[in-house]
Picture 1 (cartoon, rainbow, N blue to C red):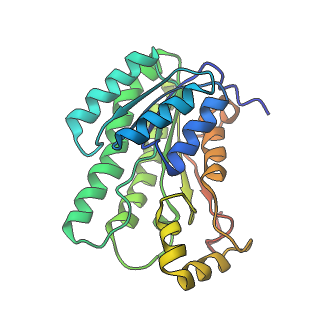
Picture 2: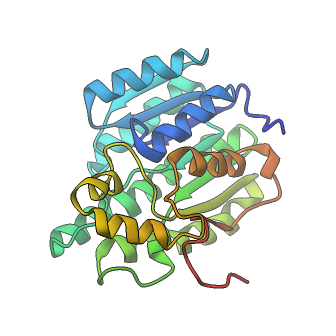
Length: 253
């Protein structure tokens, strides 16, 4: 299937590793120009070079999404650099944590406000360009009770409501808004890779809970993000696509 992404202009947050990197890599291979941010300078430089190697324009920047002013400034620069924006992938996350109020503040500022500020920055230029697609990365932690009460789960749930409502509000401007909720994903340098080494019994139990007996990969999530971001999904908005290999047991009607 031709996703019709060649020549599209995409902004991806947190794209130097994990799911964000896989999304940026796939969009670039499909011909989209990419602007992205991350906090690690070396990883930003390596990612930018790799994306340019796919034959597209790529512009990486060091930016802490929790810094609202700096983040808004980068978003404006990204739109200018690309000459517009067709796709926005709100991927960056503060991750899980049980550090009391600090975790709630971090997940609110990064996960929720990182998405909200990003959407607000791209909607006008996206509409002026004829429309586009926003994809919000949530989590199955928003759908079922996992571990213990924590900020990550609650804030990822908030993103699902925001994405649905934004999709209704932005549809008239030709902008689609969808969410993707991954299950446990084995990423290099990520939580589950660490668990594989430091908590092998817990890791194996989670892997065994999947019908396929393994965790997912960033590339498997990226393929779903790219589809929803593309014109090939032109009649899909307001949905939450669960990408978990059947890990969750809820029946989705």
